[in-house]
Length: 328
Image (cartoon, rainbow, N blue to C red; front, side):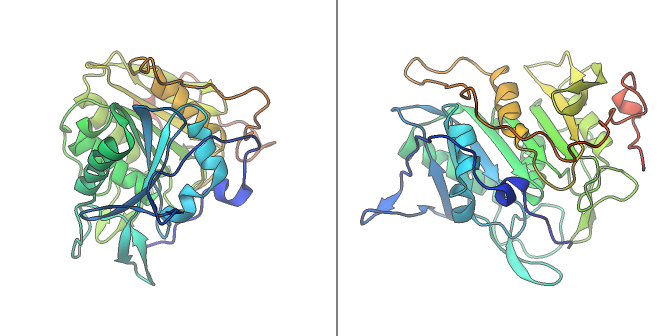
């Protein structure tokens, strides 16, 4: 297995501004992980009694839940919008050159210590009781290997969350022609990702399984949602955006491509919340979904100053289905 890179938010540090959040699991006055039957998770919640809309974040290989939940900028990006942030903890797995944390994916060879889809469900069940999260407003996001797990859940257990936002990932192994049900999914990928390439000519592989070509995986999950109108590739904020609309059951499928590599543009955090909130019911009257305050710094995109990417195709009018990733 190839080594995964760290997200840029870890590298660049904090976003300025106050943060109102509490960690709800404590012992002897100290913050501790929230234990469940098959593992643990960490959580930050906004002020107020809830129920809180919630982002479940699945980190990449060799990540750490304690480190991730302590990243002030990452937490603040969601908590300031009124969201609880849950970071489940992955178990250790054996990579080719080391042992480290990682999610167990269904199509990889080798012994599975835990069904991580069921573990995420267990975490949500526990957090609903202990921390008053709103199960009707859950977004599951994942970076890299965590994004592969988010893809699996979206395809095989779509009702676990209201929407899915995988990053720098895809579906590992042979994907069913039809998933278990329609979903809202926004996939984000770097044009020059060297770890999980956007180009279908060099798919990522692990444990004897190869990544489904991304355009094919998106088509299949869109087909499950009854989507029949493809969007032209168009500039959207700092991304090129394509996908499908006119789907059933509030389903939608979008692809955002940025100029960077195996990383997360800081603008993604507000972008994903804006997208998520367009497709869910309004928050409860006792929950204040706070907008990002004016003056909050936003990341200008990976590769600032480089030519803008014109889409996953040769022009802004290209159809996504026939798209090919350009080479340089």
